[in-house]
Image (cartoon, rainbow, N blue to C red):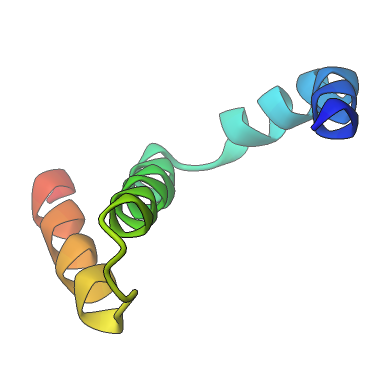
Amino acid sequence: DVEIRTNAALYLPQISELLNRVPRQMLLLLKTNDLLRGIETILQTRASSSSFINMSRCCTRAIA
């Protein structure tokens, strides 16, 4: 945990620069996927490709 925090702080400028280059639509997909996986973990449901596919469809409609 401490190592992750230390490294994150160390690489924060590079991480920020990289994220500034990523298209916003891709960030939406990545963050939504992260949130969906977190919800599945908390609810202790099995991760399935259908949830990712449905999430991707919703994100695609949102940015279209």
